[in-house]
Amino acid sequence: MRDGPQEIFAATKSKPHLMAYPSTKKKRVLPGFGLTLGTSLLFTSLFIMLPLTALVVKAASTSWEQYWGYISDPRAIATYKLTLTCALWATLINISLGFWAAWILARFEFPGRRLLDAIIDLPFALPTAVAGLSLAALTVPAAPIGGYFAQHGIKIAYAIPGIVLAMSFTSFPFVVRTVQPVIEDMEPSAEEGALSLGAGPFTTFFRVLLPQIMPAIFAGGTVAFVRSLGEFGAIVFISGNLPFRTEITALLIFIRIQEYDYVGAAALASVILGFAFVTLIVMNVLQGWHYRRLAPI
Amino acid sequence: MTQPALHVHGRRPIHRNPLRLASVLIGGGCSAALILLPFYAVFRFALRDGWTAYLGYLVEPSTLHSIKLSLTTVAITVPVCTAFGICAAWAIAKFDFPGRKLLISLIELPLSISPIVIGAAYLFVFGREGLLGPWLLTYDLRLVFNATAIVLVTIMVTLPYIFREVLPLMQIQGNDEEQVAITLGAGPLTTFWRVTLPNIKWALLYGITLCLARGLGEYGSVAVVSGAIRNRTNTMPLQIDLLFNDFVQTGAFAVASILTSVAVVTLLVKIGVEAASRRQQKTAAHFTGVPSPRDRDLLLPGEGI
Image 1 (cartoon, each protein chain N blue to C red):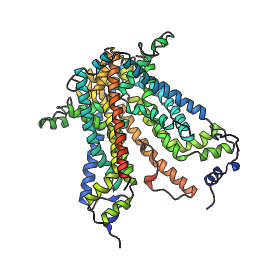
Image 2: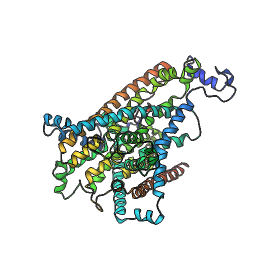
Image 3: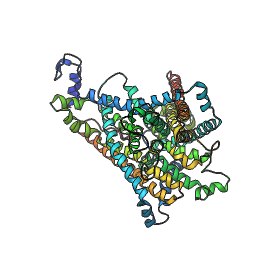
Image 4: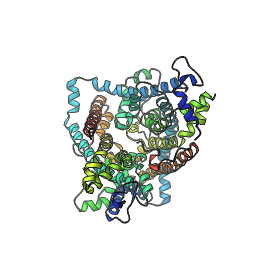
């Protein structure tokens, strides 16, 4: 096979004296490092670092007692409970259904597979407000779906199931998209080995396949959970927004801002950010623990 | 001797195994239902009074104004996010410098922060009591409760989308082709237009569509910073909210149908882009003599999410 430009270049890379432009100091061949890095740093500082700093400054601008008063207000605590519970349920649904979808997309060939694969990402493209509006319209007792459940005494819109539904919809793609490539890339040898050594399909699944997929499920579930904690647009349309009953934390922050209670809003925002960061850190630690446990095998 | 039961390579057919058939039907059906129900609902409710009524809702002045404002907003935010996405991906993928991982995490941070928190943080910078707000006001620059605020906060929220579509592709393709172009005497701009851009164009196109869809549909953060003043600072999602609270449900769904159509367009772009990049990578494999990779090993846009 004739050497292509890539092979020639790879060969010259290890021999600096053969480079087309020999350089005395460690020189970058490609242009634009300063410009592109400068632009990225400028935007990152202006649009991400600066606002977050301002948020922390605002939350810290009050005394500890006052801050504690804001975040331990009974109405606020009710919103934490509701937000965490619903996000947990939504994540459980997303993990089960998302794993299922990822599994059939990765392992089976069936008509419509490409189409199903393509529509998985649709919740990312549909505005959250539209999702909330239409899910609410479908699940109020007057609508066909809501009516069916209302007959069986289950209220979806303006109750907890509606919030869980909205959260599951907006974060559905995360688990599928993290788990699917892992299932596709699994080495068949371990599975073949287990099956040929006499393990049944269930043992093979739980002892051989699932441990390999678990980290991806955790990772996708974490992102889905964090996204659900902060979801706003989809939920305000479907939840009914009753204080102490169906009010989520993001909405209470919004209400505080509309009341010009900026310090209170900042305090609540710091709580919701705290939940997100604690989740991310705990999941990172769990992942590391899981990999260490897998390593000796 | 081979035993069919042990064949676990590739995707398996489902038609002869009732368990697999049921699994695909139920799992795929539930997923498709969860995803597609809102799409069905939007068009069903938007058109329930007929097409004339539907168009009537859309040409209503305040709705028309919200459509114009949303379009103006994305006309500014999408080019900014495109320029940023390409710049940041270029810096991170083509050069080696300490703190690259940190920079990636920082850029992707808005994806895991509540839009309400982003809007609040914006107020704490540019608001009347914010860090920079009072100082900017001395120069007569008011950056809250107007169209500028909507544009800036939309940029904050949609900044990562194009970046994260383009970055994995640039990282995989490496520097070799650009280095050859530069050493053969091409200028930086020529190198970018003739070498880099053709390689990333499909991922870039999908990123732009996604950024457009998210920008048009951004609700929480815009609701915080815009003030939602009718005929002044009402974008399409805020108009939906307003009509919904005014009990003009069909009108709300008519506006929602525009945003839903944009989402459907992103789906079509994604399907087209996947087909195109599959073709592109197969052609590249053909010319370089590298054996054609299996389908699933191709890097497709949107799968990094």
